[in-house]
Length: 95
Image (cartoon, rainbow, N blue to C red; front, side):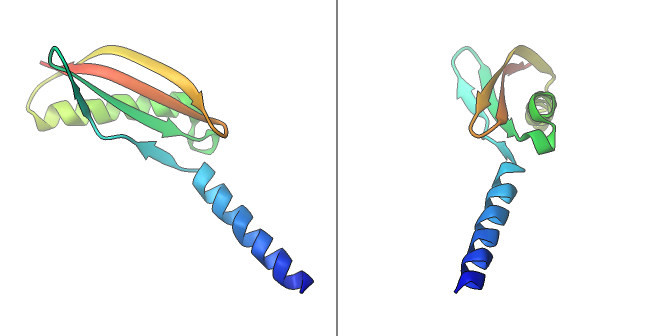
């Protein structure tokens, strides 16, 4: 009985640790005035705020390259997300 509880707790902790070590990408959203926006979430284990910013810029560039255009970053913002993740949102144009 005690072994079962320990095993169950171990699996729950492993699942939580896996989820916290992820990087999450939003899809590119089209905004008015030919602007686009996307967000990247990165855990501390994946580099936190700096990694989120770098990956957001890279994803924006990839979107523009796919359109055969150049990236023009308008704004990059960051915020904290639960549990200790960082979210970077980049607003950009493809010119």
